[in-house]
Image (cartoon, rainbow, N blue to C red; front, side):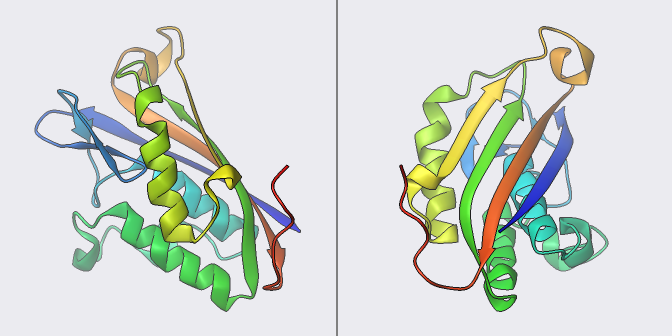
Amino acid sequence: MRMGFGYDVHPLVPNRPLILGGVRIPYLLGLQGHSDADVLTHAICDALLGAIAEGDIGRHFPDTDPQYRNIPSLLLLKKVFEIVKEKGFQILNIDTTIVAEKPKLIEYFPKMIKMISEVLEMETGRISIKATTTEGLGFAGRGEGIAAYAIALVQEGSGPPPSVL
């Protein structure tokens, strides 16, 4: 088994949609970035790539490449999943945390988990999404941006994964 860690952050700006985990969240600000700036999905991509020693999302999908301009991050996650499978690994579980003062996100978690589980062909019980605030501290606390952390556990081989407890 191997573990990978991912982190991503983007600034909040007007006139952009807020996309997290592939879900459009109604909010007055969105995340700025070359793609749709979905920090949750980007953190998951980095965690998976790290677990299989394949670098990071910027190495595979550089922001200097126009083909990735405004691309939905779930498509990037799908490409990462293909890399994971090509390298002979399967994903056992993913644990994530979104850091945002606003908006409240808990009601969107089931849909985020569903979207991600479909892309990664995983049981929903193997994906965890949480959120926290910074109690008003730092860029997230001031509402200037949103960050996300992710950990992914993978194993070599393609047999059935251990059952979910």
